[in-house]
Amino acid sequence: MNKYFVVTVFFVGMFSVSNGYAQKLKESDYFIEGGLRYGSALHHPDYAVYLKNFYYPGIEIRFGKQTTGEKKWEQMLYFPSYGLALRYTSYWDFLDTRSEWKERNKVLGQGISFFGYFKGNIIHYKWFSWNYQIGFGAVYFTKIYRKTVVYKPDNLTPDPNNPDNYLSEELDENGNQISEEYPTNDLISLYVTPYINLQSGFDFKVTPQFDLFLQANFNHASNASMNMPNYGINEITAIVGLRYHFNSNQEIVRNDTFPKHKPLNSFFFTVDPGWLIARYDDSYYFKLGLSTGYMREVLPILKVGLSFEFFYIRYLTHSREYNSDTWSTAFQTSEEAKVAGYDLENPTVPIKMPDNIYTGAFYAFSELAFSRFALHVGVGAYALKGPGQAKYMDLAQNWDNGGTLKHYPWIYEKVGFRVYVGKKLDHFVGFSLRAHFPVADYLAFDYGYKFYTFSDKKRNRK
Image: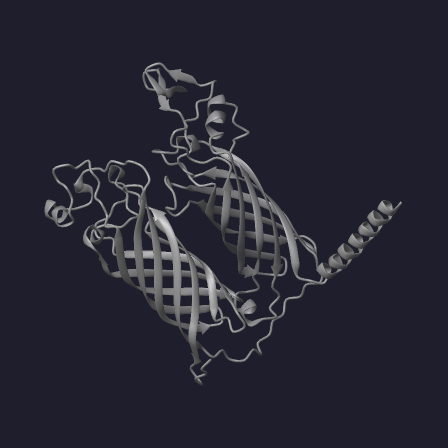
């Protein structure tokens, strides 16, 4: 009898709490939405043959908040919304009846991504809006690259002349079956991988509480050289969905009486540790970035700044054997190769980077801010690199068939996401992806502190 009483009290309590919470939601600006996705991954002819003619489905659910203009930044960004998204993608083309492609597509498995997003409006009317979205997060893949494991399904015909290949259903110009390698997932090599989501599309208000939306989506998943291979996957999909606003009486506030903005100036420092695998020899490296600089809040939604960044890179361990291409892919002349310490007599031995590498660079950046959150973008130019071979190449570069190796890579780019915390928003945490375009080479986890802030009108020491 006591058990029934406890269960009854529990359910009555849960109903009361949920009913009260539902009432609060009805008075809020929160929403929930669901969408269906369908699209394809961009095909690369060299290492992703199983993506050719490959279209797959997905679903997603989002929970977010619609701003109404109560704060100045909400009006300046034209009443944006923001929230969290959960997305599921099945990398299996269920419309393809050919057994060969079905077997190939099973190599990728499924992806479950979780990310935060910000949606801004380009055009905004009462019943219609044209918008854009930016999102960052992580994705979990059920299948990843395994060097010693090659997927060999039974229903594909083995090539009698090559045990690592099978005979495709496709025919060559002479009518013979094409011999192809058994598929392997050389796109994804970590179960959990950074995830970038970009979208643009249209919202249509059907009722005061329901919106219909149509979106075009691009997303990228790769691990920023934390493991190899790191080709990653780029997807282009279409999304159709329905959004439900808990509050049917949302009203946009248009207020022009905000006080004039007083620009703030800050001096700061950051620390950003991370790690990577060098592309040309598969060696693990630890990287530590330190920087100090100046930041100016030009507008409530825009910050710009300049800093000096110092990177210390430490060789950790060698992952596996890897042969380089010839020295000519890295250097324009043999003299340059000799200066860098390259062994011209034995061109199959890769260049050995020093155990300790250091770089210094000037870095200019901007931040698009909304409340405590900021999208960070910047470009840096090296002032010094060394010692030895490190002057001539970067760890992001690739020896494979010449790859993306560049002469004297002196410019780099960064994009990241920051959250400002503390009572005075003096501290910030986040992450940033550094790249030597178009090669991503370093995912850093950032911490920063604004140690001195003052206004243009009146200095205000903290």
